[in-house]
Image 1 (cartoon, rainbow, N blue to C red):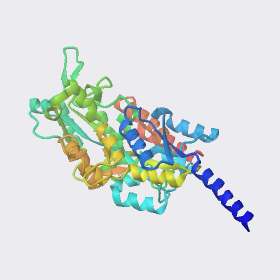
Image 2 (cartoon, rainbow, N blue to C red):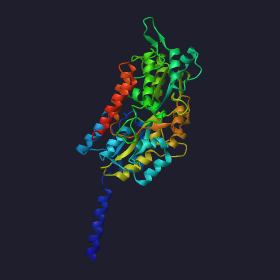
Image 3 (spheres, rainbow, N blue to C red):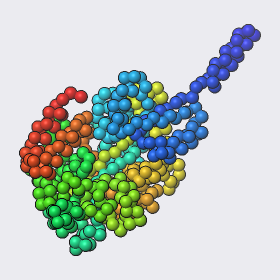
Image 4 (cartoon, rainbow, N blue to C red):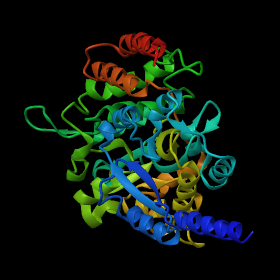
Length: 419
């Protein structure tokens, strides 16, 4: 008995020592933000480690253009991170390929309770939520108040004929007929063309892809009318391919449909004159206007060795430490000049989000006018085709009807391809 007792005590001591000597759990968090941009979240990582001595958090950064491919490659190489900051248009492909873990019930309940419903939709696939919403972007009409005053325009247009009428009053040309001040500006990116088009489509009750996710709404009369209206600005010489949204701070653009993150760019160019010059108004599509939103959400890799710890970290990062304070994710996004759909973060950020420029974006988000597009795996490919069609109509190379009819056929083919 004595020997057995000694052996048992010795065995307990060895196993107990081994338990205390275990290596800490390392969670890898992957996102596209630079080290400087993610600094507030990095500080929270260190705080979380202090509160949870068995946890270590590593950050892995990848450029957004390469992020999806990096995810897919890391899965092949067996080096996937535990947590992803997922761009919503990647979600379908990641879920279909079994890369994302579905949140446990308590996390799903946390999301439903604490986030704006329209943004939650960006993270929904197959009627299931796949992550905690983080950064959100949406579009509104941004107009130059000084140019409006100079042209004798008392209010921003509320429909597209009003956009054309205002643009005619604002546009100025030099002696050679070159546009010096454009009434309206698009470009230069794919998103600058396709995202405003989506907002105008939503205002007509349509999405780009049909509900069956195998057809499109591009050939419908409402879509053709939208593109024809945009092309009219080019036809009348009220804008051109050379006039771009980046020209707004210089006073050479009257209007544009732009995302909330343009605020930082405009602030760099306008300084303390931002609110004096830049006004924000609803999408010019009548009283039933809607706008387009896209987002990022934090999700866990399906192969993570530590899913419970990963979801626990995500929830902690998105929960304010105290009433009236922002969450860690909210702190980072607000400092970046971005938006969040976290209700507590919005309530705690009225000083930053309540200004004349940002407030209309928040109101659109909270009112349900900001709509998330259907999550399909081929969104990036669809946008490239759509941009080409839109541009061909803008430049008068094709009629709006022909451009969208051809885009409809191309996108339908893309949707039929296996992913």
